[in-house]
Image 1 (cartoon, rainbow, N blue to C red):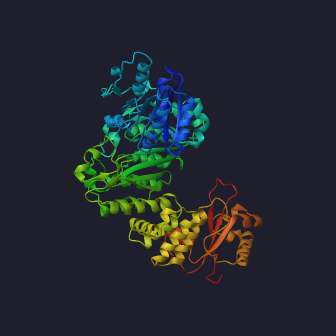
Image 2: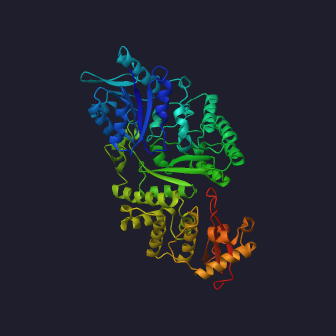
Image 3: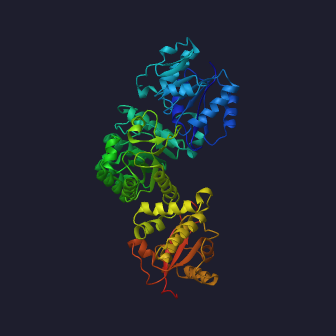
Length: 588
């Protein structure tokens, strides 16, 4: 056996496949001509097939997930037509369950590796190169004449028997531009019925000194974002604390993202992070999913929302760590109104990002096995997203989809943070109601069918607010102006509203900033900007309220106008800086 290609279709170019690198690290000693070939689901199938054909592989192994299985099937069908002798092996979570279904659906597939693949794939290659005693390869599915043979599962591997997957020389040039996925443990201690991780019992760890060594290598080699794929990074307090401390001492500007279980995070760990973590190097992803106790019980999800709230609040107050909170719409006994409450409960915690997902009936999960019990209907093919159940009809799911759409555009993208926060607090019954009403309006106008520029996001929000008769639109417009300026790295060439200042007034104010910088709020005077550079790098606009007081206290004071001053530093790595100048009433 000569060339073996390990391949997958990633969701995006910046993603990398940790699975392929594990397979290569485990097998390359015995199979040195082993190549990794990564593509994306957006790449044309013809391009992928052409590249694989050029490599002339004897064996191609594809790593399969819900996001790439259908595109992978197209590629396999084409490959077998032009290279019928090439052995096709599938592995990964999408094909590790219902394997007989996959072998029947995909006659071009020769073998499926079930579950943990390093040792099984190596054993399979060894048999294909020698005696072909396939019956001895535990964890593999294959064809024998007209039958599909499922061998017994393979015992769990000693993780420290797997050579490091992080030191391939060919990966180094792209480390700075791609997400590096990293694993310190396998398994999950919880039993959430919608998640594949619940199937594996127990948690196993890689040697911590090896883990630290690999991390130091990646950081020194230029990695900028390392995403830990451990299902619950903080399950062991001492381990998590030691790793956090290690990364704080060695980060060199690299950013680390973790999945944590917030309601078991110990106070001493939170205190340590609040005191020692540099701002911006850690990101936490926290799966809340639902705040409905009945729902959580039905899916065997143990969660103490009050303790979770304590953790999220304390992390937010520290100002050191961005938090990404996840929700799942469509869980059992969570109807539209119940999900509205879940959404509002979680949004009130103020996460930097709130991910609204929809239940997927993953193969192998308890949720899929119980689908009929709750009246679920769902897509036949990946991603198996639900289309409704006994208390959440498709019509309600579609409405929640509209919430997701505008949530992504306006909150998670941080385009209009000041404006949306003001609107939710003062103009709408709740956060969910704002996103729902706006999402419905967006759909009615047909905007989901057309693209948008940054200016469109602002003009469409303004049109929606005017349409519904929103009060105090002059205040809203002022905050929208602030948000619009903050979306630019350099001074914008155009704006989407009519300036309240004439050209002459603008020039007068800009000259005043140069002559009397001490009159401006904050540390503007310390910038020492010459008048020529003020004209080049500063935007100004009159606001009908005291912006600085609102930002500090949340109070709206319309007793005088205020000049908004936004400085766009020539160094684009520095964010725009805002200042204000007091004006003597509306006539100033």
